[in-house]
Structures are given as C-alpha cells and as structure tokens.
Amino acid sequence: MRRLALRTIALGYLAIVLLGPLAMIFFKTFEHGFGAFWDAVTAHESIVAFKTTLLITAIAVPLNTIFGIVCGLAIVRRRFPGKGIVNAFIDLPLAVSPVVVGVSLFILYGRGGWFYGVFENHGIQILFALPAMVIATMFVSLPFVAREVIPTLREVGEEQEQAAHTLGASGWQTFWRITLPSIRWAVIYGVVLTTARCLGEYGAVAIVHGYKTTATLQVQDYYENFNQTGAYAVSLMLAVVAVIVLISMILIRPREVEAA
Amino acid sequence: MTAYLTLIVILPLAAVVAASGEDGWAGFWAAVSNPEAVAALKLSVLIAILAALVNAVLGTITAWVLVRDRFPGRSIVNSVIDLPFALPTIVAGLVLLALYSPSSPIGVHLAFTRWAIFMALLFVTLPFVVRTVQPVLLELDMEMEQAARSLGASEFTVFRRVVLPNIMPGILSGIALAFARAVGEIGSVVLISGNNPFHTEVASVYVLNQVHSGNRSAAAAVAVVLLLISFVILLLVGGIRRLATRHEYA
Image 1: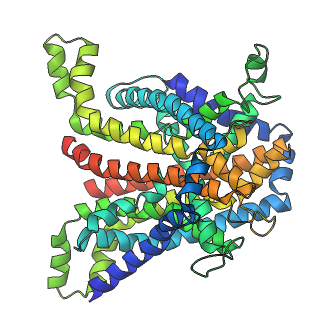
Image 2: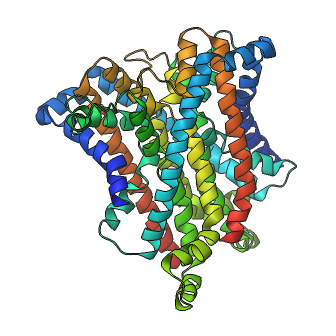
Image 3: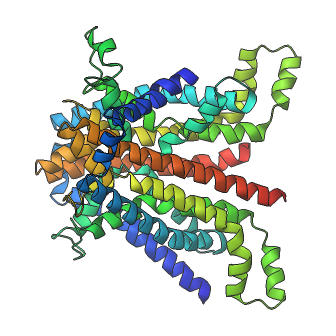
C-alpha cells in the first residue's frame, strides 16, 4: 500500500514535470500541419542556424574530447605542476552560470579587455563572431569527457599498462592498445554528453554572438518575431536530438559499468 | 593541458573578476547593492532554494521507487529522468511558456509570474537529487534495514534511523548541485519570466540586460557574485564527499 502510494507520487511528479513539456513540443509543432513544420525547418534562417550549431559542435567536441582524455590520464596517472589548479577548476563549468561565461568572454575579448588589442591589431574578430561562440561552447562543455574518464581510469588500474611497458611497448603503443580500449565506453559516453551540451548551449552564446545565430538562438529569435511555428519547428529538431542522446545513454551506460 | 584550461576557463573568469574591481571596492559595492540587482539576486537565490528543496523530497522518493520498486516500464522511467540534462534549456523554456500561457491547453496560467520561474527551475533541477541518491541506495545493504525491522522498528523509524543517515550526503550534494544550476539558470527562464525588474527579473537575466545596455561594470559585478556562489557550492560538495567517504572507512 505504502509502496503503491510512493510509486504514484514519483510517477505522477515525473509525468507532470517531464512528460507534459515533452508532449507539448509535438503538439505545438504539428498544430498547423506537417507542411508548415517542414517549411519552417527548411527556411533559410533555420538552415543557417543549424549549420552554425553543427560547425561549433564539430570544433568543440573533438577538442574537449582530447582535453578530457589527456586531463584524465594526467590527473589519475601523473604528478605535474598545476595539478591542484586543474583539479579545482575542471568541475567549475558545471556549476557556473552560462551567463557568467558569456560576460567573462565579453570582457576578455571586448573593448578594453586584455585580449582586445591582440586580435584587433591583426584584424581578427573574436567577440560577436564565430570564434567567441566556439570558445563559449568549449567552456560550458569542457568537463564531460574528463569526468567520465577519470573514475574509469581509477577502476581499471595500472597493471595492464605496466605489463605492456615491461614487454617493450612504447608509450603510444600502450595508449592505443591498452589504455584507450579499456576506457572507450567512458569516452563515448562523455562525447555524447559533450555533444548534447554543445547543441543546447544558449546563455553564453546569447551574450557573445553577433549576426550569426545558433539553433537555440534562432528559437528565441523566431519566438520574439511572432513566428511560433518556426520556434517550435527548430525546438522539435533539438528535442529529437535530445531523445536520441537519451537513447544512446541507455545503450552505452551498461557497457561502461561492465567495462569498469 | 593546463594551458588549454587556463585559456578557455581561467583567463575569462580572471578578466571578469578584474573588471568588477576596476572602480575599486566602492564601485563593486555600488554595482552589487543597486536595488534592481539586489532584487534580482534575492529572487534567484530564493526560488533556487525552493526548487532545490522540493526536488530533494520528490527526488529522494523517485530514487527510492526506481531502486526498490518493481513495475513495468521502470527502465524507461529511469532514462526519462535525464531529459532535462539532454533537452536544450531554451526549448524547455519555450514549451513551458506554451504550457502555462493564457492559451494553455491545460488551463494553468502562470506565465510571467514568479511561479513560472519556479516551474522552470523545478524542471531543470529534477535529475540532480535522483542521480546523487540512486547509486547510494543501490549500494545500501538491505540487511541493516531487516535487522532494524526484526528489532521492532516501524517502517518510518527504519527510514529515519537507517536509510536516511546513509543517503544524507547524496541528498545534500544533490541539493547543492541543483541550487548551483538553478541560481544561474537563464535559457529556461528568459522567455517565461517576463523579466519584469523588481518582480520577475532573475540575476542571470539582469546580467544579460546590463550587457545589452552597455553597462559593463554592473554586469561584471553581479556576474562575480554568481561566480562566487558557484565556487562556494563546489567547495561544499567537495566537503560533503570527503565527509561521506571518511564515514565509510571509519
């Protein structure tokens, strides 16, 4: 009886808070039929926004993945100067508001900022252009791979790597043949989370973007220009990606646990 | 690697801290104690605490149901929990607006009120407590509870004296992380809150407005307050984790 009551409370709460909104996206998007949805998704602004989002993601995800693996290896396996600083700051992007990230970049690269002159003299525009949007996205999605890799590296231990080493494997060989295969599911899981975060970033790019918009900024742009169908169509595309992310998380998680 | 972290994370944050102190302590204080900024910060902190606490209670119940209860569709429910992590916040905001606006299909009109902000924050912070409590409950040895029951403890006493002390560090970390997320949230709030100064303008939207109106030092000052809150939360979570593991080894 008590069990049933708790189950009802939990499921009821989830239905109201989570499923209501999700159902609403589908309802609103197709309110005016599939044709209207398709026209909105293939509109010039939508296509440009999707391309920008994909470009930013394609730059930020590989860089943060390499950083995450290197950082994880360094933190778990090595001692190095600045380890304390890396440890202290690596989780910060998860706790800090995206708006703070945006303002920080705005000040660093903007008029009067430390980096303003450096790039301005060479005619390179960082702020209000693609570079700042990429850096903002890299900031907010920085820790995801590292956070997945670190515990897995600890679990896996060093013995196999040492064995490879004593058998004459070079550092590279050990990494490609031993270390990377043993952490691959953690890396893939981290990449999925990083990608999701990059595609959905809004607050930081909202401050540093110029004329270019990303998919998330385009949602707001459409909404503010009373193009509801456009706003919901782009939202639906983003929601579909979110659902794909959730499904891949379900598929990957057991393998990660198994590997660890 | 340290250089990458410095370039992407540390230098921008150092720049915003430096900018907030450009006009000295007095300038910083003037920007932070501006009545509109104070109202926005208070609102953000208050609603973030409320949302974190509600999700602490319902998140703990949800985690318990997911670990101990058996019902069809449990694994689907388990994966839906992460939806707020995967769904872009602006999409969440747009949808909540449709759900709670005057033309709402469910007849609930909360848009442009503080309740709307609360609902948005409830949505984005839902997974935190569930995901910090769930692994602890999974690990928890059920023999302890059986022992307590065999000694005549009621279900409530078992929960309060046996289960709760074990999952408390998880609940507290979850609350702290949810609060950190909620206090600086923008995407899900910006469309639905109406951004009415002194009433529904949250801290992050205030910062955004200051940037757009060219008020660099005011934006920097309030951003630094938000940054400080994040630092304190991270330290707290680290402290909770250390306390919890020491308890384990004792």
